[in-house]
Length: 405
Ligand SMILES: *Cc1c(COP(=O)(O)O)cnc(C)c1O
Image (tube, rainbow, N blue to C red; front, top):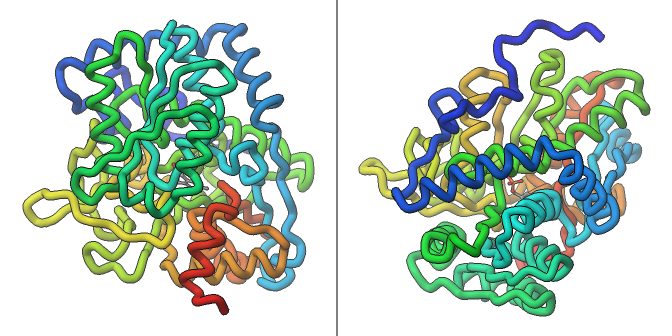
């Protein structure tokens, strides 16, 4: 394979201080510095321990259902009259999305560190369910923080977490959604850090979390690379994924960062419009700032207050993007676009109708881009889109939005 020289080494990122270029870092209260350093050390050791990696692989295989298929969407490709579209089927994993990869990895890390209590935040509930499931499996105590507004919108997911033995604590501050749930989880962690590990749900927050979450999702891209070489005998022309915090995207992209001939595209939530408060496209309306531990692109007002956000999909509805994405955006290695609520809903329906697959609304943003992009590419081009999760959780919301049509 003809690999061009690149001016960066992905595996060296982040730096020892937790920076991806000028992004990332550790912007946390003093009391959290020691536990974050301990976590960094413990993770470094675990990563080099064959026994830890063997156990991780076993859980990914036996509990989560890896490897997932790389699926050729034949009818959708024909419909688009362009590139061959492949989907990486993370929707087929246990609990319905890629989130279980990270939840398993961090829960095993917590067990190794002797921490018997797990806390996590959740927005739509997918990360909460993945965390509750692996905690049940490992016999760990589990507390999930969730905004009261999200609990109301996702009551079925709250029940699923409780069925798995998790305690779900409602958060009534502010907008009562994900940002407030993260604050509450951080507060708990500061207080209980001796026996508690905080499993953050995306490639966000203070170092070492963006690195740890990325690494536990790298298996997505490693499998994809192997599978496309088996099926097509060459690398794809382009790969794409939706970007909330950015964990499914960086997990898929990481193994392709050095292959400059492969275009990488992240798709953010364009919401109703690019007016302030109507979307979550950080790279289209955000500015550099600091939120919940990391320096990155953030949707904020003129005087630095965090802006409200909107997306039809709760999982993309967050004011900050993972710092590693900000870095590769600056290097022009990852391109970013966005899909609107309407485009995502259209893509959702098209995938159901043409391929018989019900995707998550988050995922549908990536699919919307893939459909449009495939039609611009020649017929011998290869386009891979990460199918990050299944849409069972969204069916009711879609029915409501479409008015029963
Ligand atoms: C949570 C979620 C996302 C967004 O999170 P990332 O960290 O950006 O991957 C995307 N798709 C699905 C199905 C999700 O559950």
